[in-house]
Amino acid sequence: MSSSTLRRAIEQGLRYQNYPGRFSGDAIITDFRDLGDQGCFDVIVRHDLGELRLLAVEELLSNIVATSRWVLGKPLPITQLRCDYAMPGHVEKYKTVFDCPVKFDTSSIQLFFNASVLDEPLPHASPQSSRLYASLCKEKSIARTKGTVSAQITQLIEGSPASSPSMADIANLLHCSPRTLRRKLQAEGWQYQQLADSIRMKRARKALADPLKPITEIAISLGYSDHSGFVRAFKKWTGVSPSEFRKKLFD
Image 1 (cartoon, one colour):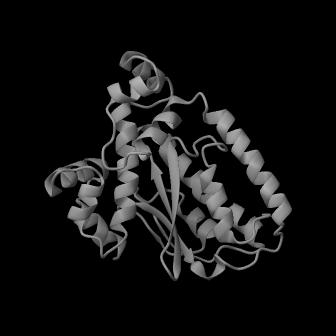
Image 2 (cartoon, rainbow, N blue to C red):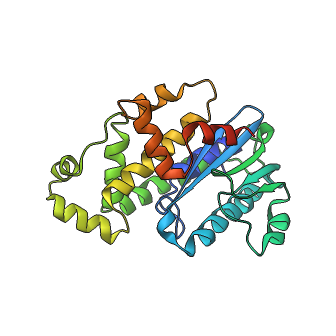
């Protein structure tokens, strides 16, 4: 609320999304894109949550709506919600909470809104408070992730986007054996390949949102030696090919 604009508030919130909430920044990851006249929250959720997956998604989406209202001092002007799951039995609640057209069984989870509000001055902006709260968030985030193996691995993988290090490489960097690393990851609900794939999938989906970027170029940037390898991996992650995913984004 003390940020200068909604854009700045979103940047700060997503930077420290691993700190608050039951799912944030771990089982569920949020990204944001400015598409010109539209702002877009991309939500990526681990599929192994089972029955909790819908709860995690709905909690996060409703929190975005509520928090944006507090920050803006008015409702977020949502234009569309896309959900990658079947229409739930309580779909009428979506109309009350989001007040916008909703599509189900899509290729991704995305919340779109009118981007004109991104750079409006916020009613409770306070540079001094913003700096103070940002520093507190940073301290809490560091304390929280310092002993979290999945967070450390994520940082190492993100540091080499075109060539994800192997589990043996990661274990060596973290001064432990691959067996110990595997055990610690499992205790946090992850497998190494699952974690690496989630990071690649997030990058791929974000890159595919640029209609001018060739799919082969995206594949190479993610470390794939050929187009077909990337297509197979993307189908495994999402159930559709990169070209199909891109087409659905702009339907």
